[in-house]
Length: 219
Image (cartoon, rainbow, N blue to C red; front, side, top):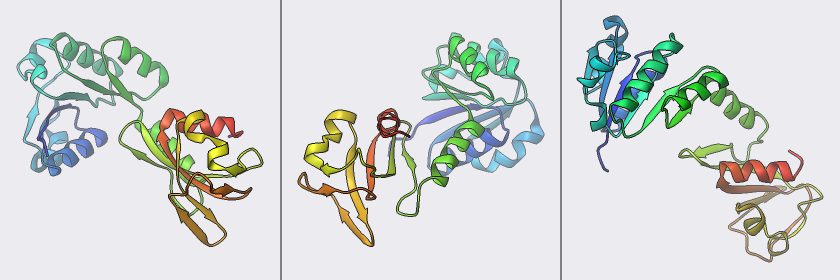
């Protein structure tokens, strides 16, 4: 495994969980927060934990953000601080900047000032929970990395016929990896497999393609 280096700005719930996980996975993690008390829970699970105000470009420059594989701005209590930290990291040549936002508007602003990716933890958790709640027991909707997932979808009248006839890979860029019917599960069904109404299809694909597939089936 390649060891990567991360600079995490902000030791709140997201920053602490992220830092601890990355460190426990064997990566180098430097966590900064202006509050020494906030850093205490993560000190044993980080390469370095430094008390400083990283929203100032001159101060942040001392950490060399360009030398990290990614800079994560996990400042939750101050939107202004998050904007300043993202702008400073961008100006200092950070390779990749991931920022936390609480609203869609905040996400748009952070992207405009230099964030390569913006996450909304509560919103994203809500989306995952919603998918989990509407996905029965065969398989939970889950994510593979950032852009791929596996979901279970019930076959309606528009999803009946052989897999060859349905052409789901060509039409939607998703792949059927299993089909459940009553108590029987067919793994890796072949092109001549006949899908009937009520079957549960386990499909894999890019998140955007899965969304498009669901929309085409009426949600």
